[in-house]
Image 1 (tube, each protein chain N blue to C red):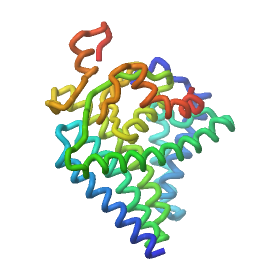
Image 2: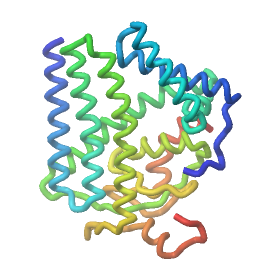
Image 3: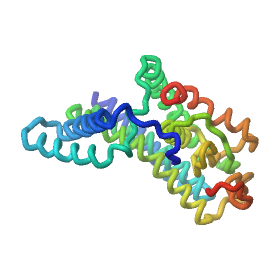
Length: 112
Length: 174
């Protein structure tokens, strides 16, 4: 059980590390959010699972924390991304298409 | 999210009781104790929240409670976890490759889901699947930031991004 917990913790840390690396390497704010959201969600879940193996008494609470992370993490990323786009954050030159900006510039009668 | 499609709970009383029970359940789980003072605080707090915020937490009242919907919920959770892992491996591969192979863009997709809770779960799921992030939502239109755009075409993007989850959520929330 200790070994399994340790392995899970290491795996979780690796994903968190990759998430951090993604924040540095990605070209613009939206891509950074992508790297940040996904890697931290799985990294946190794996770490929590690791803790649960090391401290079985805490398993239930850790499971609840995991559940909340799973629900709130993507939501906060979406709101960040929306705020970034509304405030006109610069997008990477690699960006191929921006349907949202196009629809905003040519209103279809519906407020966005 | 727009509220025009919000289905009303069976009865207000049932909705309030369900919310109260849920809150109390979480409170007891988090405390890990059934001592009297803990329970009293939990009951008072849950009752207050259930009375004042009932109409804003439509989580259970809108989930269909048929056996098929419950089975689909389980299948959906497994599909979600699978996508979460593959999403992480995908981002890890991009971050680790020296030339950083991204071709980002924001595409527009359309969802068939009408229920606000179903749409919310869809957005969440999309955000945690490989290379996609929900940026904005306008009625049935979702604007998705895609880390490697395969095609800016609405139909094609909808099939690639939305269809997988929609299959499950359609049965769960309709």
